[in-house]
Image 1 (tube, helix red, strand yellow):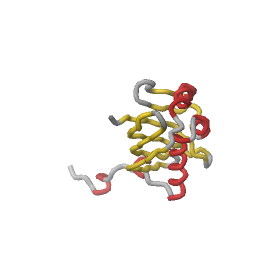
Image 2 (cartoon, helix red, strand yellow):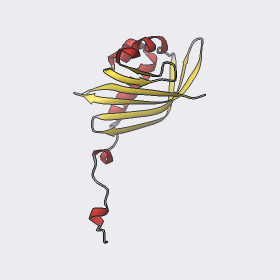
Image 3 (tube, helix red, strand yellow):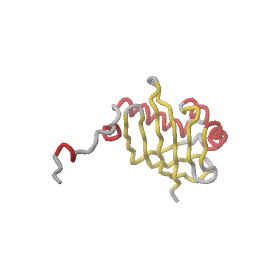
Image 4 (cartoon, one colour):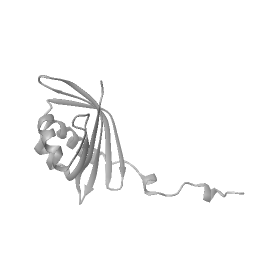
Length: 137
């Protein structure tokens, strides 16, 4: 059987057309992500979709919607965060940020984790639809 060059090409799926964000859009999202860590649960709630999903080291594990906020009230408000190894991927109205975080606040050991947040651009407003943390020991 002979395969032409045309049929051997990969299909033009939407995910194969992914790209990145403009420097301005990246700045907006990285700022939102930093404020997610440092500005408390009210700020996190304002920038997160209603039925978002978050995955934290056990416990609490997997949380969705209103289950998220009691956890974030106790676990946000970090004094400082450093996000290293930043990466961004965009596919249409979805953007994924991945990074290594080191977060610090008084009377708590420095928290280190690998993180990923997914944002949806909904009518020119970016909203977090998922967030995941894998603690590093």
